[in-house]
Image 1 (spheres, rainbow, N blue to C red):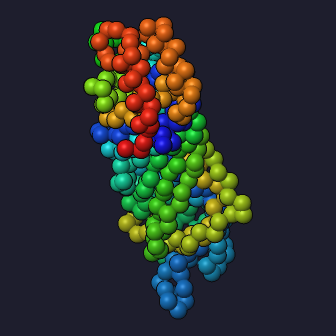
Image 2 (cartoon, one colour):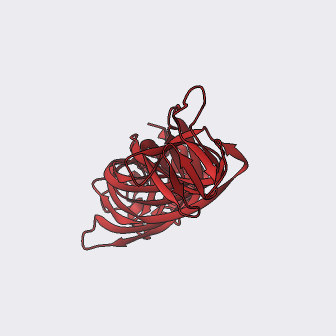
Length: 353
């Protein structure tokens, strides 16, 4: 039985005599930078409570007047930022026809984080109507955003690249007969995992995506020997942004904050919000090296992923034309021994081992 991955590659290979390889990423590095912005609307109110916090802060709208502790209309952007170098892992299948200079890739699956997490810093930018606080006493003019860093309260827990359609490209000979420059374009989807830990709450993990993308890959294909090849690839830097509306809006846990004043004192407030959209901005790039094992089936002479009469017919046509590929002995002659060897390979069939 021919491997499914080989069957897929053979179906999309431009010519019949391609070699099929299964590759595993052995080394490399990736750059992953991400900004997740959660846009919200709601209100803030002082943390004063006559029973539990009588010395707390009170909030009152406007410049003058009013009494008590009143909610103030507010909005907030929560900004989760991360970035760093990672060690990606993954695998893919590749079909290389050196004579025709054609290459195809299928089954590409990369974990750009290599199973690790990227810590992320969380900050909140507040925008509100004009209000005053008491205990401490301070005026907060409206329309002036305040950014408050909240520390490391999140992480990027996943960055996965998965191929969605066949990718085809070209192999260009170099001065070394075993080395070819490689370029191929691969349609993929990219999925992120984001972990956010609200203050005083439990971590929440959210999958974001998948987002469609088109990866242009460039590098080299190196024939090591009959059974092994090596590929070095560079994934050109990809930038993307997507806005995801949240309908109905998501009620977020109440968030206690300490607002700065001109002195050392801070005003304690409680922020209550509903999230209405998420904006994801990303920058991804990588360079990887992968080692491949030749999984071609010699008897599948026409490379269609099946063993049948058409393979025999294709071999006999090459034999009659004295195509060097049909010299299976190989002794530089075209005779019964070549045909005998092909029939033996055909009889043995193709297996998963």
